[in-house]
Image (cartoon, one colour):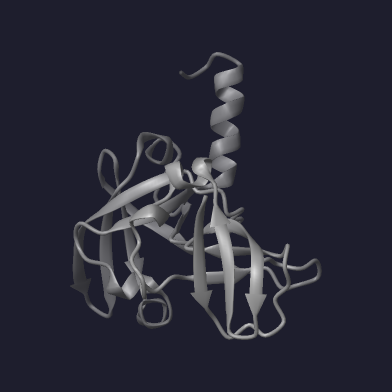
Length: 179
């Protein structure tokens, strides 16, 4: 098992609670007022870049939504589908355009103006500039308050494809309509 210790100002975390770390839902195994520890088993390590991360690397954190909370963004479960690679980052007006090469299981359910979670951040697919690449248009607020503003070509990112697209794909596969 790989253990990750994360400094975070969540004084009310509890052992056994779920928390998304760069989009991967993990269970807190130990905590104190200013840090917590999670573990990534072999399955999680195979679908994420946790084993490649360095000490002090910033991550996006999101606590589990509670029933009755306001719902914003799209449905994100914390089930990382794979790792993508940033291939281009450029400014366009007040936005940052980020092109990400994505694995086939993400590409086949990605559509313009559909949803994708990138390192746990709910994003809209701006465009599909070429096969196997999704483009994001990231606003300044998101750049400043998440790790997306620090991305550079060659960086790896966790991806969670649109949940509705994944269900539709599976239904079509079960009926023999797609491979």
